[in-house]
Amino acid sequence: MTAELKAQLRKQFFRQRKQLGDKERQRQSEAICQVLLDWYRGLNPADRPSGKVAMTIQFGTEPNTDPAMHSFYDEGVEIWVPISHADRSMSWVRWGPDVPMEQSSLGPIQEPVGERFGPEAVADADVIVVPALAVDSAGYRLGKGGGYYDRFLAALPDLTERLPYLVTPVFDYEFVDADAGAFPVDEHDLPVQAVVTAETGLLWV
Image (cartoon, rainbow, N blue to C red; front, side, top):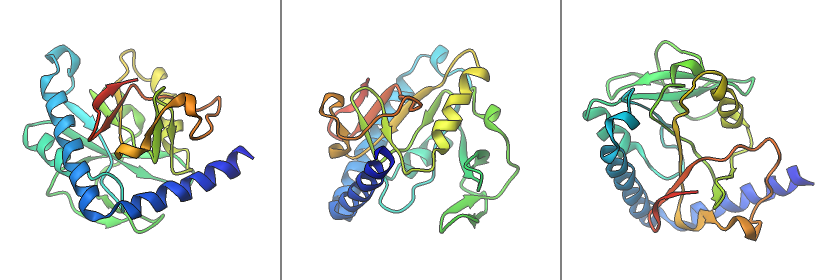
């Protein structure tokens, strides 16, 4: 029943993102980007030792963090993006504006062309921007259902002694009270440390 309920909720959140409209999605996305940039720039050097950020390339009606990604790159931050595989694993490719793109073998998503690395390539990242359809005030996410990030995050403690900051950007209404039980949380679900919305800014959870 939990899997069926999550599937229904994913459809609901996808529908709501579409109904939000291009203009409002853009407004909130711009605010989210500014929060991410201001927060990262304000970190002490000891809190961003690798100068490396891992994040996804925007697709569909997701919050558009691509402008932040370009700004990070322009400021000398090393950017890594995930590549999804049929076995539900991910590899990682270093990204730059001049890196050629190609369509993913799994769907209509553009991915960078380049040498692919395992999770150890981003285990030392300062920040990993973790996508979600919704996230609650305890840091638990409702993902798209593939479990890619859950598997990746579960492997991180074995790869590094210093975990990256795990930050999830969502639209305002997608940040919900954990006590309200907006979506079910399983034992294997892994929480993020912070949530970014246009309304709240960056909020530690």
